[in-house]
Length: 310
Image 1 (cartoon, one colour):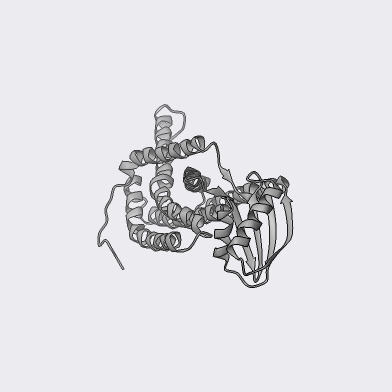
Image 2 (tube, helix red, strand yellow):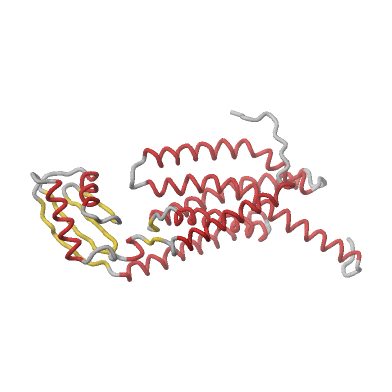
């Protein structure tokens, strides 16, 4: 299926305009961070209060969620297994006693004909959050390092690996900025979504890099800007179709997937668009800038007699 029979867009000529767009997105991210006074960390990072409740009869998880919301606890997570419900809430919302009393009162009024028993209420300390924070940082660092090594080996250039990682950081940071902007909690789901965005972005970048390398081998005598534009235009239809299908799925999850997957889908909607943007307008443009400046430096060195022409 082809939406365009012939595409011939000069992406390289407009690269500075897209650098400006990228800069504005980073400013939005910084503004969101300042406006929200930093990320809104979830229970996974801050610790919290855990309550385990067993009901006599099976309950619908969504009804329990509504009951907990009516108790005045705005930030919590639910897990269910048959008649067993586990509620986790951020530690800074209520004391353990207030939390227990408000939840019991709300659930009792919501399920008057379904007796329940509170099996345990305990405090999850911040050391859990510190451990997860360190692990999340390690995950990103090892992922980035692995990608740089793979791409540098695959394309025989550390520059291409570095450019791809800059594109990934671009996508992840801006996606995180939009999460902070709408004040969504940063939890393990967000980390998983950001890693998914990174994986999607690098996949798109490798496809384009591969086409550029192939054209360098076949059309090496052509102007570098012309060759890059040709490569982008050749994979543009594939990129649009692939990204559009992912975008449609992400939008479907966002609007119809429910509250549990809402944040994940929100990040994927943004990350899908950013992945295409960074691949075409950031990563490739950085390579072009570097190679062009490197070529100019070499020519100047030859003119000045610093190096000899081969």
